[in-house]
Amino acid sequence: MVSPKRGSDSHLAYWSEKENVHLKFVIGRSSWCWNSRLLEEQVTSLSKERVWIMAFGADPEMREAREAWDLALRLGVNYSDRLHIRLRRR
Image 1 (cartoon, rainbow, N blue to C red):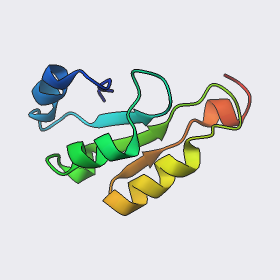
Image 2: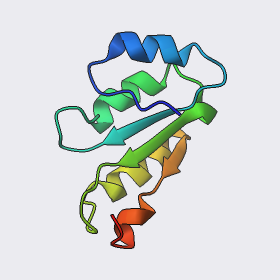
Image 3: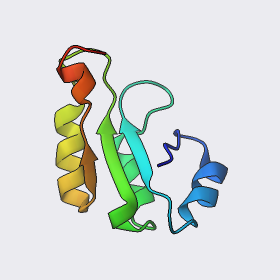
């Protein structure tokens, strides 16, 4: 599992060519996180069964969780939750 940061196109290109690597994209407001629009553009060229979307979260509210869930459903890719934060065991 590799989690490419926004703007790291060379890393994304390298890892996306590897058949045994899954890519986990984090949606959020931080500068290194992806947003829905950028991620939709990236996913079209990737193997959907190897793509995971996870919300950025440092508190139990995880404001981006619904956006990440909806985007994963719409794109037909995997969703990853942050259970350790939901359970308040960061």
